[in-house]
Length: 168
Image (cartoon, rainbow, N blue to C red; front, side):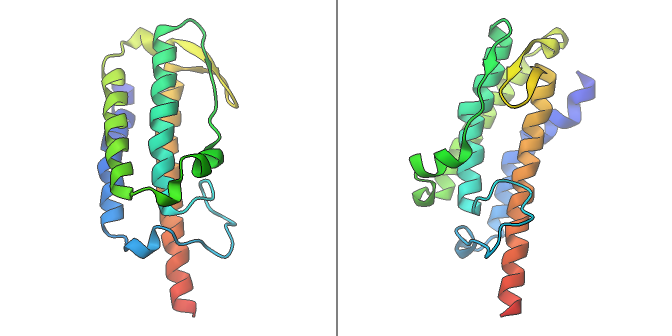
């Protein structure tokens, strides 16, 4: 498991990393939308929506996926339509602090699951909708990638907003 140490640490640190970025972000940036979403490295979501998205994908997606992989034989891991959640869960009316707190709790649960796995658990497999065959180890990497994708999306939005503010 030593080969996963940095990835697991990145997962463990991500809630505080996310909070640190948001501490420096003015509240008016949370709902800002660019004229064009071309080039965004994540889904086309505002910062507030990105935070709600990582919360929901953690709780309803990755926790469930890890539990299924660890306790079932060859489970099917459904994908989640993130854009559908924006409307159904009213992301635009969600308090960011509340969403971050829920994400923290979800990530803590994920880390308890991952801290308990054994080297043989890493090879447990299933089928992830949209990805195909996966293992616990590959899903760990996909979750880390998901974190980085949304941090990049937030940074992209802040960059686009800074450009829009200076070009006026």
